[in-house]
Amino acid sequence: MLCEFRLDTGYVHTYYVFMNLTLSVDDGVIQEARRRAEAMGTSVNQLVREYLEQLAGKTDPKADAAEFARLSRAAHGDARGWKFNREELHDRK
Image (cartoon, rainbow, N blue to C red):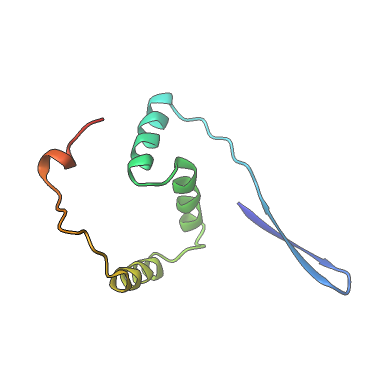
């Protein structure tokens, strides 16, 4: 959670403080969440943070989708001929 503190001293200083959160979650759930987060190139911590921001109304899903679409159009990616195949998609490590 992000808290903003302002001190009124003639100069304006803004301090951002991140608060820690402790959750109780089954070990199996955490292990699977970590595995999936790794496959997505992120962390469970980041996924939970983004979910809470969305739940709190900090992020706008429509604006996020529009930004994703804009970035996708601007990326001009090149897979160099590589294509997904069924075996690679379902390959278990």
